[in-house]
Image (cartoon, rainbow, N blue to C red):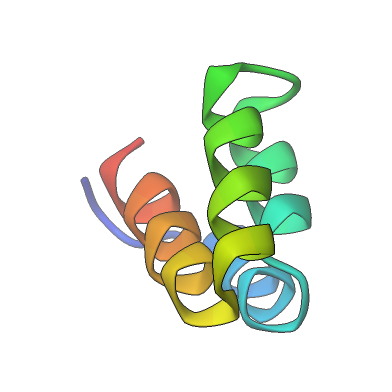
Length: 57
């Protein structure tokens, strides 16, 4: 998908707190639960997954 102006704040949120970026993109979905789990297990995997969700959807 193309990168839009609304994706920039989502990326900023994804770097600071990955679940917030996913929540802004997908809402309260299974993607949010996966991102929370990955962020708890390791901060970097949470960031990578959040960026993936923002770019993919």
